[in-house]
Amino acid sequence: MNKPFIKLLLAIWLCLPLSLSAQRLKKIDYPLPNWQNLDLQADGNFGMSTEKAYKELLQGKPHVPVVVAVIDGGIDINHEDLKNEIWTNPKEIPGNKLDDDQNGYPDDVNGWNFIGSDKGSLQYDNLELTRILRRDMVEYKYADTRYFTPEQMAKYKKYQQLDDVLNDKIKKAQKTSEDLGKFLPYMQSLLRSVGKQDPTYVDMLRYYPENEVQAALKKIVLLNWRSGTFDEFRRDEIDEPYQFAQDELKYHLNIDFDPRDSIGDNYTDDTQRFYGNNNVGGPGDEHGTHVAGIIGAQRDNNLGVKGVADDVRIMSVRTVPNGDERDKDVANAIRYAAENGAKVINMSFGKDYSWDKKTVDAAVKFAMSKDVLLVHAAGNDHKNTDETTFYPNPRYEDGSGKADAWIEVGASSFRDNNELAADFSNYGKTTVDVFAPGVKIYSTSPDSKYRVHDGTSMAAPSVAGVAALIRSYYPKLTAVQVKEIIMKSVTKVNHDVKVKVGEKSTRSIPFADTCVSGGIVNAYEALKLAATY
Image (cartoon, rainbow, N blue to C red; front, side, top):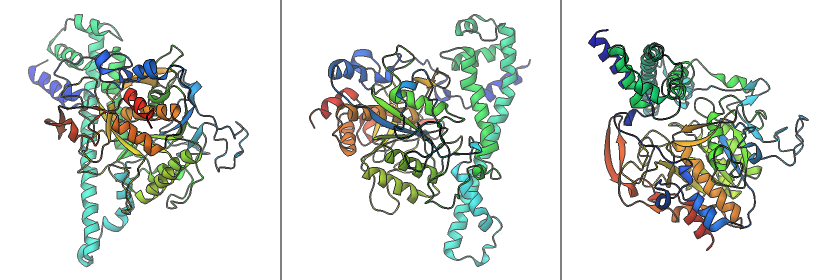
């Protein structure tokens, strides 16, 4: 193989959307197990001091179970570390196909699935951007703009802008798919040369390359592989990003793909509430299962992981497909959870555009009337949400204010240094409330397995778990009081952190400028403060 080919191979690697891409050229250490629940001073990992709270504050203290709704892509309710923590509807008789409690959802024993029907459960959907363009293209794609009013012209220009965004996303997905597709055969070649189908990290270190191409491949692998088996590395860094790019092109960004007919509802009717099925797992339950484990995986069974809260009942409300969630479904999911006893709702999802925010706002107001605390992930686009809007959010579109019992959560890492704010996390001095652990979080995965994931999707359930813990041990506190306690008891961060600017550069800002509270959620301090209310 010649050197130009090796340069091409390395160029392909540099374009890959690897999860460690921003850090691939530096040494990365790894946190302690269960780090999100550990204490910075005692353990050296900037967790939430949850274990310290159990040891020093909660032993022998009475508590009550708290229902936590997980609005997500579904949960494996039979997971070994979750099955004893799953909510069961006490008014529903399992399997009789009747609506025993007359709530409009027959056989909703463990929750409800708003993206399902008697035809099955929906797995893929578009981005909201794609759906909006499909809705508007009839009016604007071939429009004669000569006779447009100024208002029509403004809408037409907005349509063109969104169309440009979609086309840019399609080009990026195509390039990622092509680059990773070229890379896959070379990975198989490397395995053949190493002589093992699933080599260890040590095996790869000891492997002596046969030629310059194999040497380049070895370097790529070692710079990105930090833990687990080679199969796990390939899954996380190559196979899943490749599949995601394929899904983007086939489903998310495909204006000709519209699966909504399979649900059987009238999507234009935002007042319609009773549709779906009772399959709360469904396809694509990896994300929701991971979230559920962070909140409330069983703590005393010597298995897997320890959830933050020790007495929760996790309600699965399946709403988020592989693609963007729909506003109508989100609104109905919030209403369902609030009506059926949830005191905390975790929402680890979000998007850049909204189809019908007023319907979501109405559901949020309903949840506020039911004393429910909503916990939402701030997003993973390393954007300042003071300057760009991320949906859903607590600010009501009609100008009537904002939801008081809503916590917006950014993701933090395990070291108290300038990388404390995760480089992918959205932030905002007025729009993000707190930060919480969201980097290298080990939690439950379907089929009684466990995996590590990053994201504000992991940070939000860390906070939801703390909120559930407070509401369990201090059940008379209101949702607004619980938010106030969490905000006031954070561990303040008094140094600068790096935030990304674009895809390649960074800048330093005071951590106090990343969120309203200026700190990391601390379960120990929150419970101490709760005791004074």
